[in-house]
Length: 182
Image (cartoon, rainbow, N blue to C red; front, top):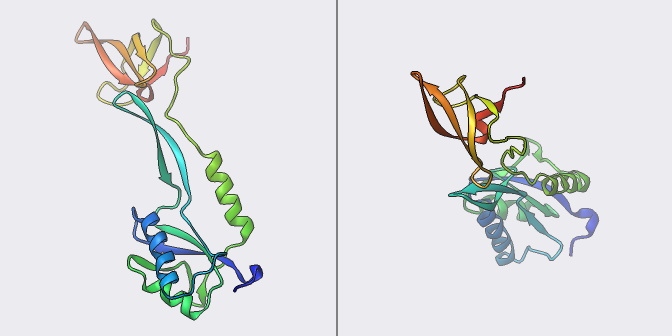
């Protein structure tokens, strides 16, 4: 049994978009080789992101470090060989002298940062019907118009824009318009 002092965090480079499966596979490979101990740990750091899809708000897990898995082990040659030989593992992050160790404080800081990184799409509480806005993205970039309606759930607004001398209602995302300061 490894002592707590012998345990260190390392970073494994893996194939992107398969981090969670690879972390489980590394654990399985180490258990099959009778090298896994209860104090060992694998970690894929993610954050919750709020997205709006088809008018519905959803929370999805987004990886903060795509292509990397953190592992806490007492690294020796046999553990390192099993980890490196696991399918879709590209190797340890480090230099020619060996894998780079991370401190417990560094990893704890990354986990803490991930828990505070829950993000959401831009919310435009200050947008009001009848307000003048400038289009800052898309086909109608730099044109000005007036907000006719807004849908906070879909994060979209209908803006009346003058095109060829006629007022035309165009539906734009909140991130495509900005308020004109008077």
